[in-house]
Image (tube, rainbow, N blue to C red; front, side, top):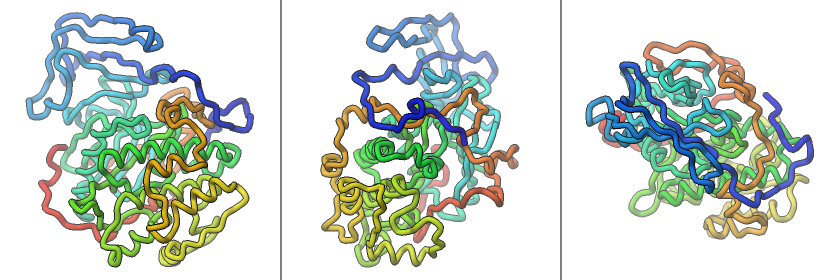
Length: 442
């Protein structure tokens, strides 16, 4: 893994910018002349400079009369027919950061580059959009696997919530499409890889660095809960690092909106992060968004130590043994914890729900978070680690075991290599069966 950059090798400490950073994304228009073009213009587009308040970012806008290609049924989500902006990173002009392609694109719209990761349901690849010359993360999910696991509802939920996301700490969705074999999600590519890969880097993850990441992750979870969803699979593998060193929450396949009673009842998640009430669902009659804050406490512990509260480095515990440890609630703290961080983890991971810290505003006001939350929301905190990526094919921050060239027929997910670092830790248990209009809307 590449080293990235920190402050000239100095020990990281939290520094807040006085002003908001320069606009991270540059809007631009790309008009393609090919037969599969998204836009066609009769006149040249104009280039206008943005106001000084936007830090001199150049804004490109098509002033031409343009028309969407495709039937009304497929193009209604796509674009404003007069002006279309595709946003790219201000730091990496090959990295797509904004745009809505609806369901118009197809597999042959992309050039597959490398496999970035694989999980229970599918494979994520780095892909180049041929007509635009920009790079995205293309997630493919095999339809047979979806049906075998009765997971159509989860895939539909993921698409719905991703389109609702507007937090800078959540991954962006640019569109979806399908073929006979798979469902595809066109998503923002985070060049810095998983936060999980930083866990062995104790030189990076000091006390203040852990606080930086956990605060940004809080903002992502807060946004998910504000939209009315429970995330249900928080872990360092589901947090990516973008080109500026900030967090991006990904993988919303387990996210769900509670029922009319405000409860969820299906058992899903990752063994080491499951809460007591989720494990005891038969007795608790369901759970709420409280389970995300339990997992949040587990994540803080893992960031600070490199292992979860109910396992130890090098231990080979069965899932049953992990569950017993969770139900007992005995957490051993290491020397990395001071009184504030220890108290926060103990309150978030208390085995008795009525004694647990589960209210967002109360969590934010805990003494551990001695910083201006507005500065966090505006990404004015300098990151402890900024990935060094010079070109799209620089994969320093992705595991080499995933670098498998090629695609299966029709782009279906390929099997993971036998020597991959670890299987996905997520579990699906007792997923409810529902009648769903299969794969509609993709």
